[in-house]
Image (tube, rainbow, N blue to C red; front, side, top):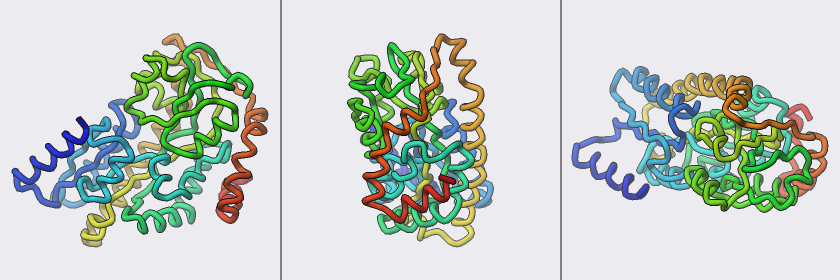
Amino acid sequence: MKRLAMALLATTMMASGTNAAEVIFAHGANPGNPRYVAAEEWAKLFTECTGGADTVNVAPSATMGDDVEMLTSATAGVINVTANSQGAMSQIVPEIGLLGLPFLFEDLPSAWEVLDGEVGGMLDERAQQAGLKILGFWDNGIRNVSHVSKTVPEPVDIKGMKIRTPPDQMTVDIFEALGAAPAPLAFSELPTALQSGVFDGQENPLTNIYSSKIHEITPFITLTGHKYESTPVVAGLAWWSSLDEKTQGCALQATAEAGELQRQASLEGDQTLRPKMEAEGVTFAEADKKAYQEATASVYEKYAQQYPELVTALKKAAGQ
């Protein structure tokens, strides 16, 4: 169905004579998610900046495919921009997965400072080698574990847990180190998989859990804070290179300004959603962070062997 939607959109564009002045911005978030709101704001800001010379067609809720499919479509020029996921991007730029080293960032502002500095520029250089241009980094939060029937305050509680992860090797490694049984799955397919019993639970920031109503299926949430994930906003490099300098500036400006909105919404969600979710029947528990850190130390050892300089630089930038 998603491929059909992509084909129909492309056919409609050709039939109506639409040219490159119509920008397709695709993402996988549902209404109410900060990413959804920010994409709508991006469209508004970009159109205003270009004086109406360019319009934006926002395709939300994975209507243009899952994150991996959207990245492929951006490279191929089927879509122009996507607010994507760290996990999917790590399949193209493996180093981006290092942002998810367990317990790397103490809080969201610390992560943003690193992403907006030299690390973000380095990751953009690597992405361009693969045919993609990173316009900026929005937020996908510090992640927590939700379960259908219990909280998991200690690492031993998570052993054997069938847990959905994004298509991200770092996340898989973290949960394998904890003795769980992780398996990647597209986020759009997660509610059905949880309802059918394929998984015992999943991990996401509170904003994603709430906006997707996953808390109604997995009403036991443990505030593990085990890793951070960004939302890279990515353009197809061919499309990006075809733009004049002013239009490129509009895309960067729209990404930065909409990103401020998105980041703040993500931060506020972490601070305000717990009482709202408790009122809806969710049970929360605090995790033993020290025990979890000790249980996932082997993940650092693995990636320090593969990327010694970058892991050292990331830990330094994050204040570790």
